[in-house]
Image 1 (cartoon, rainbow, N blue to C red):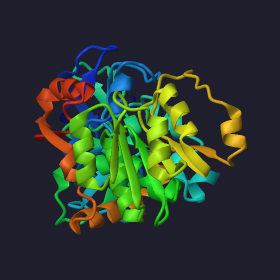
Image 2: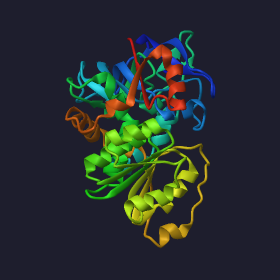
Image 3: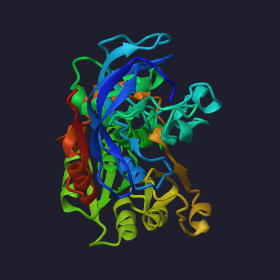
Image 4: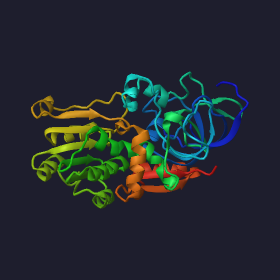
Length: 375
């Protein structure tokens, strides 16, 4: 970590070891440099990715401060910040370099430096902005924010200004989980009016996709899960049909509902068997988006002829392939118009109850936990 005199005391939740509880600790955070902004975190979503990183599905160095669905207020600016101002309300999203071919082409989620900038445990030079009270580096820069903290540093290009009249404590999940589900439907799959769509998994990402499919004009929207309460909520949010995969053969049911197979589908469970079944239930020229994240090295198996003969496609999707500066404000506007009621997915917890939030999320009790942060 670079030596700097401008250190701020912060409260953080630290992941020390796989499958071990987060611990609430005191740390010190340096001030913003370059194009960075210091954000007082009002609330941050807890995402499945936080938990699989804690458990080392991805090799992020520990101990680390995770959190990547932050929302808060800009408190200080680096000298190279151009557009944001102190006092702006922002949603923090994923990190991207901003200058590689994917970034300049409007596809920052596929940035050439995506993994090190979001999962590397430090900045582009391997330095951390956080340190323990005894001066030891604390891995951070998780999704270019590490927002399980009372204050976070982000870059201007991943701190997205949102309207001041929007409920800031609710908006953090728009930076990742909600953006992923909705963006997969609208940006990646380009679900069209009158089409059929199937969501494999009715968690926060899957239900965000259901809401987005309704916005996009799909007329047959199927939610598939094993939890009856989630399926009930899916109907409330726009699904026209639900399937409990413990009670029905999903492939047969999807084919029957759609009259031969779904036009579009999204797999958000991270289970290879679910992916394979979803491919089988696509109609001719159908498209399957994949957002569920299993352990690195996980293999899936399917009949290649199910793709070849029907002209079907599989598409991997990161962060809903969104341009956050455009898409997140659009989702806020849809929410304010009552057309994207993602508030029905959330439950709030104080930061010191992060382990309860994680447990409730893992058990399926809470779809989308949001941690209120007291700075």
